[in-house]
Amino acid sequence: MNVIPLGAFELSLASLLVFLLAFLSYWHRLEIERPLLIAALRTVVQLSLIGLVLNVVFTTVNFYLVALIWSVMLTAAGWEVMSRQKVRVKGAGRFFIGTSSMMVSSFSIMVLTLTLVIKVDPWYSPRYAIPILGMLLGNTMNGVALAMNTFSGLAWSRWQVIEQRLALGETSVEAIDDIWRESVRTGLIPIINSMAAAGLVSLPGMMTGQILAGNTAGEAVRYQILIMFMISSGTGFGVILSLWLVRRKMFDARERLRLRESFYRIESAGSKK
Amino acid sequence: MKGLRLENLSFLERGPYTFTVESGQVLGLHGASGAGKTLLLRAIADLESHDGHLWLDQTACSELSGPQWRRRVAYLPAESLWWYDRVGQHFSAAPESVWLQQLGLAAEVMDWEVNRLSTGEKQRLAILRLLQNRPHALLLDEPTASLDQGSIGRVEEFILSYLRQNSAPAIWVSHDPVQLARVAARRMEILAGGEMREQA
Image (cartoon, rainbow over all chains, first blue to last red):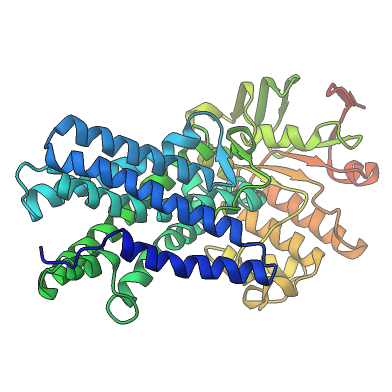
């Protein structure tokens, strides 16, 4: 690798810009300087720590260590999905529906990619397995959170329509079909947009990183295309799976709506993102 | 045994209710607001979870899926909701033009936008929407509450003739004792505690 090395001096040069922005904020009483500096500090600390961890993990190819890191990533993603829901399933399902859908879709796609497409040896080589799951989970998480939030939120507000459709003899799947389709689409729009804009508006982060690190553009492009395909299918499967699971919780065996019994609403959620 | 039969039907700490509405018969139901008339209809339509048994003719509710039962034992809610833009989208096939005529609806009503409809038109269309499945029993929650005097008679006549032709049983909830005297051969009152009392 022939990337130009970055040292503490180069980074402190860049940090001057952040300090300048903080000073401007103070000068104009924007009151954003505190959160800005705290967030910048968190970036330094969190990324340095993960850098240390990855240094160790990348040098020791140990399946159990990799599996441990995967579980931490998955749990964090599952927690994030749950905390973005305004209308949540009661009980443990509020965490496990999102988490298990992401696990099934992201893990299986990761394993397929590592074993059949990239053919890494061993397939759990951390240098590939961890960043790939990270990219998959990061995108699947957004899609699943968005789709689940749309689905349960729309069902919560349109429950009377769902009930009338059931009263007319529609099945649970029919009665909630338009909400279901709208939610799947909502979950998939961000990734479809970023595929459509790739290369024209945005150079995806991974590709840019590879090019900066000295790989040929062709190699970087092929990896990025692979990643985009994996991310979009992973997001799609994760979204559909999670909405299947949520829909099952909405109706009982006699196909009666059980929204008020099985779900609850958080009044002040959604402040994140 | 023909008709709609309830045997020890209980739900949400109400009941047990045991009675039969025979084929072609209308059971008029009245009682104070909040006495549980709507709940009872919803339980019979299997929209509320319940204990006890329900039969329509020889078929038990438990032999059918929820949606199959609800297509046969059709529940008309007091307020009708519409979820598509146009009336016709809520119908799998256009209703017979005789039916539209009998209910005083324009022939081209299926092409209309839902938000153009008056409350009364919505209610009459909700009845047609319900009858699409050709139900074998009707559970009517205040079917004429939002109608003007002229339409009330028309809707009563329409529903009664459907029941006659299909020898279907019906439970008709109304606040108006005069209406129940017109349409129902048999009348019951739900008291505040949920207790039911047959009226002479």
